[in-house]
Every structure is written in C-alpha cells, then in structure tokens.
Image (tube, rainbow, N blue to C red; front, side, top):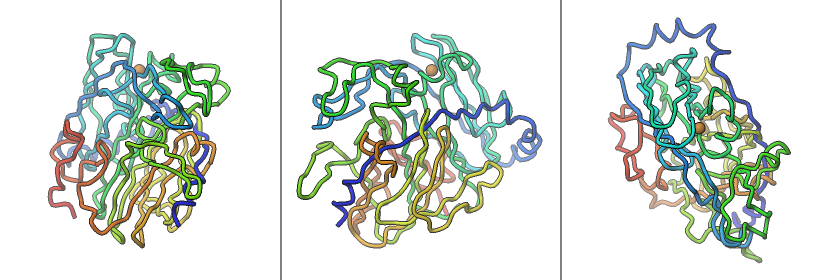
Length: 371
Ligand SMILES: [Cu+2]
C-alpha cells in the first residue's frame, strides 16, 4: 500500500531566508541573561573545511552518482546536531581547517555576539557563548565572510541544527533530518549525471532557483531504497531507513537549510503535530493533527508523529519536484525496532545528555533519566 505512495516524490522550494541575528537583538538579551544561569555549561566544536562529497547515489536518475566540491562542518553535510537543555550555556568553538574564510550563525543565539562567530580565517579558531533560553529546533549555518558568499557556503553544505530541549518535553524517539539544495556545475540533469566529473557551486542555477538535487542529510535519496511497485526504480541500493515502533511517539527535528525553497513537509500514512514555530513560544503547539507543514528556508520545526500500524511510511517534501530531486526518506514501523536503531548521525543527544554532540561513531549516549 505504501509502495504506491512513494511514486509521489517531488519538488520543493526553499529560499534564502537568512535570519540575520542583529535584527533580532533588540528585545531578547535581558531574558537571555535572566535565565542563563539555571543549567549547565556544555561545549561543542565545529571544524570548517572543504571536501568532495557524494551527493547522489549511482542510480537511473543520476548515472554514476554525483560528486560535489562541498564545504562542511566536521566533515559532513549537514554539520552535526548540537543539543542542549533549556537553561544551559553552550560554549561553541569554530576551528577553520579549510582554505576559505568561514563563520557561524546560530539561530538559537539572541544578540549579535551570541549568534555570530564573526569571520574566522583559515588556520584560526574562535570561541563564543550562547544561552539556551528558548526551547525548540533552530538552524545554524556559515555566513561566509560577513555575509559575502553566504549563498555559496550554505548551498555547498555548511549548515545544521541545534536543539534546545524544553523543560516540559515529553519522552519520544527523536531524529535529526536536514533538507538542503544542491546547485552543481557538472550535473547535466536527470537521467544524465555528470559523466564522472565533480561539480562546484553553480551560481546561474542558484539565481534561477533551479537546484539539481534536494539532499536529506547530505545526499539525495539517501534513505529511499526504491520507488514503484509495478515498475520499480532502485534509488539507493545502500539506503538505510528510519525505524520506529508502531504506536510510539516519535519526534523529528526537521531542518530546512534551503537556501532558497520552502519545504512542504508531510509524512505519507501519518499525521503530524508541530511543537514550535515562534521563537518566544516554543513550548506551545502550533499545529495539531495536520497533514502538511511549511518550513521556511533557514528554519527548523519540531514535528511529532505516531505510526499507527506496522508498515512503510515516507517523510518528504510534498512539493514533488523537490521530492523527485531527492527530498524524501523512508520510515519503517516494526515491532522489533529499538530505542537506538536510528540511521547513523540521525540520533539526537537526549535531555540531560552530558555532551551536546553525537559520539564519533554517529550514535548517541542513552537518555539520562529522561522523562
Ligand atoms: Cu563557510
């Protein structure tokens, strides 16, 4: 039943809505300081560099697979999830091991000095602090050289998500999924591929709002083995899928890196409840038992869902051009699913975790008395 479902993969539109934090600095600092001392101080290290990343598997849509000259945090697209508890203080260090100027803007920080690292030159590093005042999921990204080139650095993979676990969060199995666009000079289009070439950022495609691929956690079709029942198309023979237990509460931190297109998030076979949407009201529920939710570029949403029956489900952008370009992931509901069987690098450090990051092996420490 769910096989037919997958046929509807498709498009999206995610645009560049970079929330430039100085614009937001007027009303928040007093609250930040008032609540900052209640939690723990945690440290996270992000290392900026450039590297070639495979952004599409070898399949009929992209013969030979697609490689890209990416810009990355900690060696991957996206950068690692960073998770703290509300009230915690986060000490961030950005180390630039690349050849280009890089920087960071954390949307969970309020105040120019809380949100932004400022320019970090090759070979240098910078440490600064933000306070987890408001619960929710937030975007982070490179701002290049004081916004000069930000479009290329985000399009090239320098982004991720930060979670501030709210104090009243219910226990759930949690996942980290980041959608992002890829504009590739070498990609000749669907069914054509790159003839073995590795592409770079294509500013013409970017300006025309024509991404070649929509990545989920750094690769198109990363978590979609195949579509089609009568006529089957193998999309990724190495695909991992997300696993859940029927009936258990799951929580999805869905990040839309954009930089240009809106995300029309839907789970085929389930309904969703959205736990945030506005910075100052992230404890609340913005949307209950809905079918599809818009996530703007440069933003993240906390989506909760349960999967009523065993079987196959699909999380995707219901803008079908974007889904066809890779913006979808398969979810298998099965009774033998466990608490720690998330695909690598998709678990979320739980509330009370001593570290805000995943372990080097892509797994997370178990919840410390999470309730
Ligand atoms: Cu950068």
